[in-house]
Image 1 (spheres, each protein chain N blue to C red):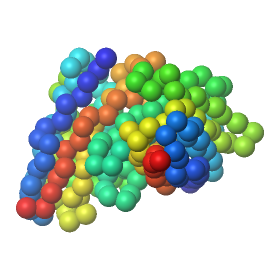
Image 2: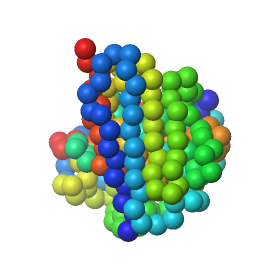
Image 3: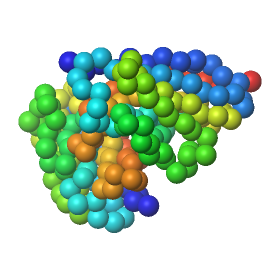
Image 4: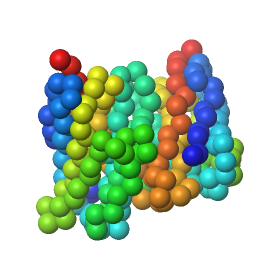
Length: 109
Length: 116
């Protein structure tokens, strides 16, 4: 079973700062990792697929990198609307389905 | 534009069966896996399972014994049934369209509360 770990659990930053979120898998998921943004009362939003491909309509300040077991989501300069919970999700094997990480909350400092 | 609209009972008693349906508007119904995801209060996202247009399913192993998914391609709808619910199944349930790239389109979410 593939388990995803995200760090830190909470990130307190100010608007304009750079956010770096980490996601680690206990075994290789190749590049089959996605990132989602989730705000209270809203539907989760797909940001990044295949580790580094921005989904349609996602601003360029969001970028993803990594492969194998270590992945990073970077928000280059936080906007007020970026304060949310971010989840990584893997699907390296079609039969095993999706797995989400526990999430990183990005709070306003 | 792809839209998913979901509905189902929002209040259940312990041991009852949860039943949710999701209708898909726009886009192709085949070629994708149609998923259910939930979020218990104060917790993270949990993938429940998925079904494709031919009825092939993948279920979360931790829920597999209690869930059944079905699909009606003539109506572009898919459904989730979960038996023997408990308070631990209280959550917002989402339907979503899945592909190799992830879950791009989501339903609006349904809060299901299990309480006696």
